[in-house]
Image 1 (cartoon, helix red, strand yellow):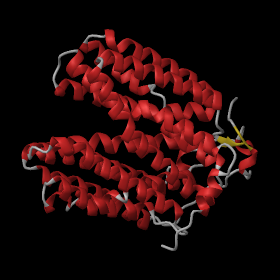
Image 2 (image 1 turned 120 degrees about the vertical axis):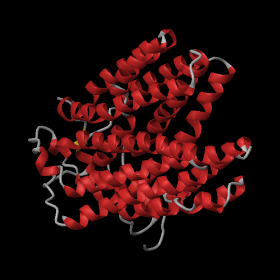
Image 3 (image 1 turned 90 degrees about the vertical axis):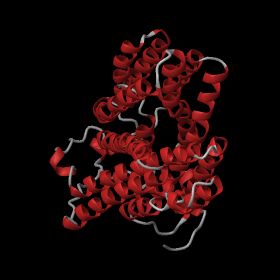
Length: 408
């Protein structure tokens, strides 16, 4: 794998615009990561419904987001970033502003539209990094991005729960809406580049020229990764709840996140990387035995270390691979597909893990979801090996200094 050095991070953060983008992305992602738990608490505590109806609202948002991500990406490709941001920011403001006054049936319908037009901060940041950072430096760039995501997930849900339980769910919902709208405005003002100057006005290649086996394999690995992560999340909570160790859930999840951060840091600093498909496979395999060592909180912390260290590196690696396979003129659409693959894994992993817990015991949730992720990763590797030769379309030649926003 090669040695480790901090030079890649210094070089990436020294590229004009990257540090500012990372800081705004970090702040913008915090309210977005809190959205799921705040909606759940609003349905359960604010509307007096059960967790089943709350889960249905969450699933509806997820379906809308999976469909909307590539559509919004296509808007970026065709009409520029700012036009998409205007639409998504207004839609987010309208959705979150209406939630406190919507009865459950109306909320269920609005949830789909809210997900469909949700601000795609994650995809926009990854697309902009591909425009700002030369290909040879993207691994550390996406490692920083993955570490930023981990920090957001460690902060956002905690703040959301705190506000919803100490003030009210309506206050949490409205605060979320205000901060998401503020994030959209900040991104509009920043207006980060999404393609190079040479790519503006260039013809868009047909789908068959870029939706090829290698990209399909990476998207499969992406889904495998988030399936395992969502399943692990549910498995941890179920294992500790079933043994009366609820008070340790926060510490175990924080340990998992911190180990992932460390893994992402090491991965970005390595002189040579590891294949995204290999990382996805290892993540699944190392997740399978987590619950078999025991269900004491400190045992779970130790058992999570190997797989946890691969979380951020795998997410960084798949994002890097997608950016390399995406022609600039359709990069928004392809990054949207990447976002949909991430969402699909989350949508599959949590209910799969929950069903296993209900049918057997929490320890088997790790075995099943880890195994499912490993099987998906094996499928991705098989696709890549079956069609190893990939025709890569030429990219418009431009340095990072020549990048600009694609606004028509």
